[in-house]
Image (tube, rainbow, N blue to C red; front, top):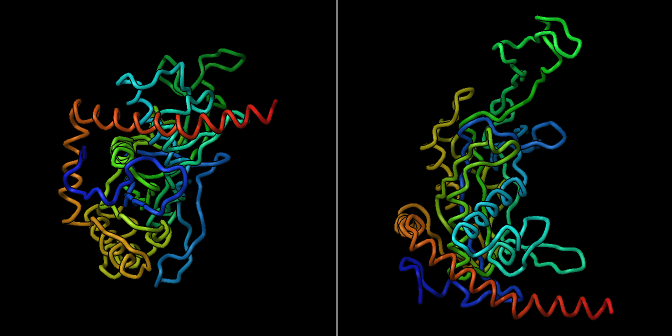
Length: 338
């Protein structure tokens, strides 16, 4: 029985297929920083030197949000929900340690366990880029460790002199609040349940990047979904098209942060123009067409009964897939060893 009333069943697979069947759904997401997150490698913020826009050929440096920085927090939110509603235990499935291989997280997002087996992720996420330039989007903080007397200086422990400022001072670049990262999350061959599972994970995830317990607050604003028989434009090209649109609208007001309403408007206009140039069959839920869908999804995921229905259906599909295909892989791998 269908869960959704706003999307036709023809866009979904009736079960998770073993081989790619050419159905895609693309979640059009704007990731908005709301604190000072860190997307970094080797102690430096990730950035890339790219063209400012599709039309504007000026070269600028942009902050980069690598794909694992996006997908890992979202799948961890899904795993948390599965445990909360009794569909998975920490003992039977531990992330990157001991995958159970038969739950929605493992089947939808994939896993690899050496010789024991692997499953390719059906969720495709690519590097996202900030709309604004690196220089406008980051800030350098001096970090130090206060002592119990409320000062930044030592009280004379460990050989240091009382009142002396110790070496516990460091500088770290952080991404500013209100920096925008357009990101397209793609799910291959969605069933209705896997579509809702991934949709819910994107909506619920609030922290990205390093030190997620203390900072890294990010809000995901979905502006639409696109059902298609192929992949669509890249994150970079969408970001560049948004930049061009905002430049044309005179809404780039550096060094002031971008206005969220201006970004959302430009993002919708840019993706609609890009989709008009695509050579694939697609059905777009963008703007007004997306309102009824996201409202229905939020109503479903906002009630205990609704979220349980989604998780239970996704779990049943995952276990059915694992029984048909994962067990065969394990048996074949065991036979090869013997």
